[in-house]
Structures are given as structure tokens and as C-alpha cells.
Image 1 (spheres, rainbow, N blue to C red):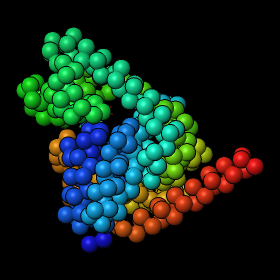
Image 2 (cartoon, rainbow, N blue to C red; image 1 turned 120 degrees about the vertical axis):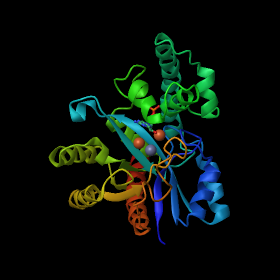
Image 3 (cartoon, rainbow, N blue to C red; image 1 turned 120 degrees about the horizontal axis):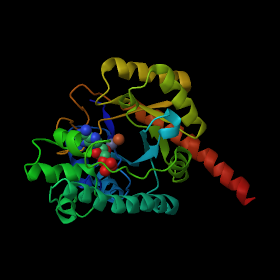
Image 4 (tube, rainbow, N blue to C red; image 1 turned 60 degrees about the vertical axis):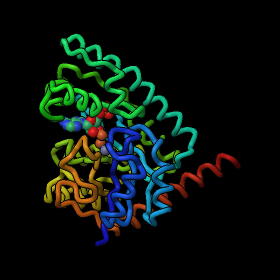
Length: 300
Ligand code: AMP
Ligand code: FE
Ligand code: FE
Ligand code: ZN
């Protein structure tokens, strides 16, 4: 088997496995490479990289951020962008992620207040306990609701309370597209649009979105994704080739918060070939070389 998974979450964000456990799981599953791409944080990267070294598994340090897609799509929308091979010590990236984490810290009590207004006595402490002291996101609210018996499953928690427009929804602060993509690039990351099929855009609109994002520095497209059906994976792979975007693939494994998604294989039929890794790395080296070149020019 020569498979990889370039989109996963750990306890550093809203996954249920620690970075070390995740790497061990990937190793056991026989994957050749794993990217850790937690939401808004790189706190798990050092541990994942160390575990990768120990087990001889190639670990790609990554991150996933949301950018504001309202203007690009002409309707309320968030776009998720992965940064592959970000430098875990990059000061600008740390600063940017701090901004996003601070925004979450402001948002979480507002979500609690909405639940309290609905007569559900949820507390922030309770939700934080599910987050294990790390970054708090909506999946942790879903878990708290589930344990209180207020909902029967996580899907219901999102549909009734947490999804956009639902009763306890509070929007999340996002960077504007140019800023988010530039932030990832500055930290050496290859910007890849995550799960583009989930946007459910007609081909023409998706293509125009991608062209505009490429103008802002987008380099890759996550054509292979758990929740893309076979036809979508194929169409996106072709579109990427036509536009000059490099193809990526990953499961978006979270562990318990998304129990139906398996590491590597997604809903069962995901296969991300190792060959993609070399193409992605090559593209990343090219992007970095250009960035380095620019820096040199500025220094001269
Ligand atoms: P947040 O970053 O706090 O806004 O939470 C977003 C996360 O919630 C996503 O990354 C998913 O992991 C999860 N999520 C979003 N929608 C759903 C849903 N309908 N069912 C289960 N999990 C979801
Ligand atoms: Fe998530
Ligand atoms: Fe995402
Ligand atoms: Zn994700």
C-alpha cells in the first residue's frame, strides 16, 4: 500500500487523538505520510514531528485556517485553506494564529450565552473540559450537548444549535483571503483549498473562484477528500490540472467527533497516492524559492 493522508486533526484543535496517537495510528494503518492540519493552531506539530521521527513516518507540518469567502462568492461563506509544510516556529504565523485564537476566546462565551438564553445551562468550563484545555471549537459544544442528553448525536447538535443560522450560532472571525493565504506562504506553507466539493458550486463558479484565489497565492486543490464522491474527485483533479493547481488529498480525520471518517480511507473509498506528495513538495520548494528570492531582493 502506498497511501498518505494530508488532512487530519488532533487534540490540539477538535480531534480526539493526541498528535502522537495520530501518528502512531497512521503508522499502524501503513500510511507513508501524514499531515497534521489542526484548525487555527500549530501547537501539535512538534509532538507529531517527533513521533514521526521515532516511527519513521513522514509527517508534514500543517495548519487549516478559515478565510472570509463572502465577497468572493457573493453570499455568506467560509473557505478552508490548508497550509502544508508551515514552519512551526514562524513568528508571523504564530502571531496570526494568536489573533484567530483570541477571536475564538471571545466567541465561545457568546455561544454559551445563546445556549443559556435557550434555557440550556451549558457552562464554558464544561465545554472546555471536552477540549482538553486546548483550542475550543463547535465540536466541543456538540460533545457537551451529547453528554447532557440534549441531542442524540453530533449531527443533531449542529443542525439544531451550532450550524450557520441555527439557534446558538455565532460567526467566527476569519482573515480576508489575501491575508490568510499570504500568512501561510510567509511561513513556508503551501496554500491548498480544502474540501472544495463541499462548497457545492457549479463548475463555472468554482473555476472563477479558484482563478481569483490563485491570484492571491493559492497553489493547491484538495481534490481527493472523504466526502467528495468519485465523480467529484475526478472532476476536481481535471480542473486542478487545467488551472495549474497541484492536487492534494486527505480524510479530515477527527477521531470521535467524526466517527464515520477513518484515517487514510475516509468513508471507506478514499485513496490518496504517495505520488502526490512529491508533486506537492516540489511545488512547495518552488514557492519557497520564489519567496526567498524576493526576500533577497529586498535585503539588497
Ligand atoms: P469552528 O471552527 O469552531 O467553527 O467549528 C468548525 C468545525 O466543526 C469543523 O471543522 C468541523 O470539524 C465541525 N463541523 C462543522 N459542521 C459540522 C456538522 N454539520 N457536523 C459535525 N461537525 C461539524
Ligand atoms: Fe474540525
Ligand atoms: Fe475544514
Ligand atoms: Zn479539517
